Length: 217
Image 1 (cartoon, rainbow, N blue to C red):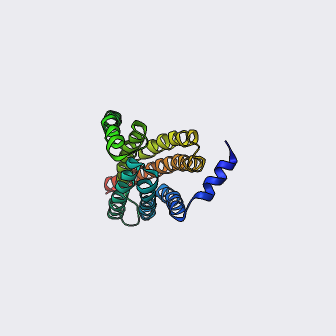
Image 2: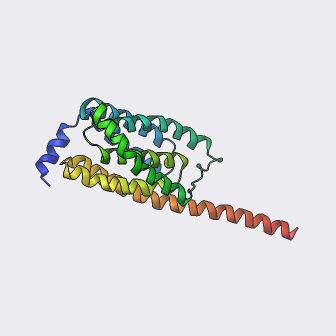
Image 3: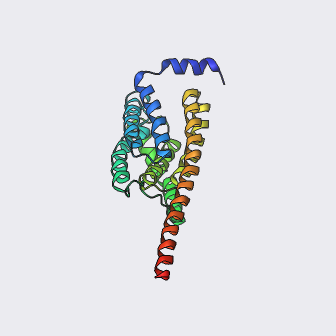
């Protein structure tokens, strides 16, 4: 890696890009600890990146993805707030394996016609790969809104792949950013797994105590 290229890319970032990058990292960190406020930072980050994607980079699929993130950010904030039980955050859930099989297969199949449309009519620079990442990210975001534990597995895979995509494109700053995202997503998966187990054990203990009390009566 040419460090001079990385330094140039850092220097070339304007305030919109730095806003998108910094708030994006804050968003993922707060999501790791199940904070509903994460969605506010996610909305800000998506708005900044969408502007750059549409008007400078011509990454149309990514631009539409960021617009989708803004909408999902509002829904996610609402879902995580109303899903709280007292002082406890919205419960972490998991989806059946078949849901994931159907979702992944749909992303791979739909990416071909959608990539053609984006390249031919919207001037997108990248085709199939860009669209696969877009559809995969949409599904992962839906799972995140639901607080599905497995959303982090999708983000680990997607972010890891983007590390290499940006690296071979000599977009070293973004490659480094997605290294950070990959690490945070891995930590988040472990954190949520622990929280889910702790929550389940808490419910089990409560039920067991009530059962014992009734038996004694």
